[in-house]
Image (cartoon, helix red, strand yellow):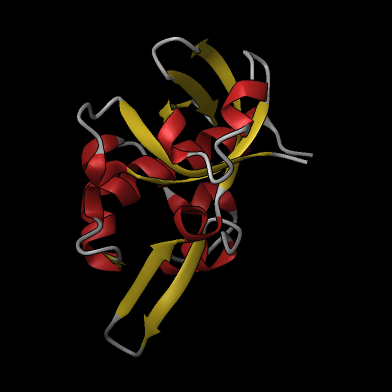
Length: 153
């Protein structure tokens, strides 16, 4: 069972990743710099690991390691590739858009991003949807665009 501390760590790591990544992946050194800028009090040792690298490796449900050598460690955000499930919080059917939440993040939902166009007709606030996302295609840094949307089963 996830605790609030786990959710807070996941939200922080995703926020840091979004600041540190370049061309779809993050370098550990840039990630470490970004995490100290966002939360100067952050200490990976509070999570029973010996290094930031080990913390990232322990979060294999969030991150996918793309390159690991003695002096290089790059990783991507796994949920961008595989998708997440979020709750539709607002739905403006006539205008063709709405908003969903996943783990303290707000996502912009547009009917054109549904894999099955009929699904847009069947969703309402409270519906659970599955989607991928790409914050680089978002117009507002507080709202990330949901892509490849489907109704979660």
